Image (cartoon, rainbow, N blue to C red):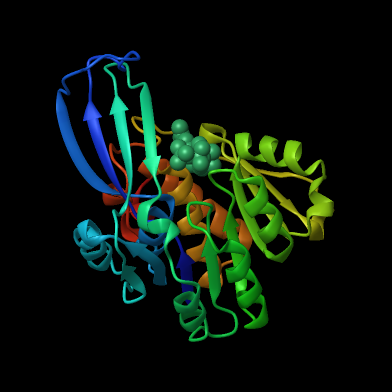
Length: 291
Ligand code: ATP
């Protein structure tokens, strides 16, 4: 089947700095690197690395052609990524010597995805395909409504947390993935317990402790899953790798538990590497690693 990912594409511009600048301070950077990022692109790369067929629905500016090319090299179908006026979404990331960071995010083209194009794209989807979405684009509500009409399954990573987007999507989603902080934000914003939200399966990730699966069919009794023990050097993109692999596993017909375990192995390998989209491990590496 196919995963249709309505997702952000960002350029991550990372400056190493001696310390995070104070208000009014001008600071010389020690180095500059530029890479592919954005939760949407990361999840598309992860799902494609996990051998799924992935079509990415998104937008970039003229300055984002290389990012799209790179996604294509990772095996993602990029024909539904449009080029719009203005900048590609980007993150200016400052990292100090202690690894502490400050981030300024500009949504750019990610907020200019055309609803018409999204409709045309999803009309090509087959019943049983997955729609995957996060909160770094707009149009979540429109996308899930369309997906439901077309008989698609909906997987929603509620990150970064956005109460309004969550309200529009949750009751239509089959699967929701969030980290422990986002779960707290959801509880605070909705005031509801999981049973009232209307999603069949909610997975809460808890970093190096693994996480919990909550399923309607099991009366919402949390089932723990473990994270393989590794020496973590950079946890950026762990959650995106987890979600991309998880949906790829489900799309391939693996049972939920097995898909979660595969996702946890992929994310564990990911945290042993420095970087984001460009270092998401492929399925062979994940299968070959003994933790
Ligand atoms: P990030 O924002 O860093 O991408 P996140 O906050 O969305 O991640 P986490 O809960 O930190 O999500 O991590 C997602 C999954 O990645 C975890 O459930 C776990 O399987 C794996 N993971 C994260 N950190 C570690 C670690 N230190 N060791 C092993 N696995 C990890």
